[in-house]
Image (tube, rainbow, N blue to C red; front, side, top):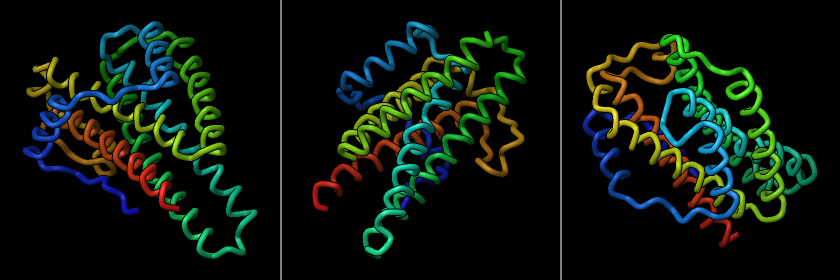
Length: 222
């Protein structure tokens, strides 16, 4: 399955924002709701750079878990070339998504540092690693039992992230007038404003969600 990740034009990003804002959120399962409730309890319901940074740190976990399971599968089934090829393609997709989430994280880390935002070490350094560790093993376990369960959980996570970013842009009009400068522009992209940058991240999350939903559909025919 080819990746849908792409850099949009400014007009396309505005259209993507409206598409998300007009779309209802997915019906989240128990595990997803528990994760989102935990984050709201610990970090508050308000959308902030620091909370987004935690979100992005956790977001890499499913792709890392899938890559781990895939490598184990290849090791034991390398003689089946068709199977090995399909699994390796999954590894490439997971790695690309993981790298994309990493750019999000690095940009948000840069923004919080540039603004001099003070963060509690326990809440914003140690606890996110614990949550990511637990989320990783949950996704790993679900993937081993039934891959579609793990894909669905991540689709719900990405849907949540997509709406959070697009709602943040809509709720924070001053982002339209704030320019975007980053050490990672060459890697992730240049944008006319902070609003545009967050719209692109929101669109990325939507694409991750759609890729997971496609993976669920494909799994039914394999």
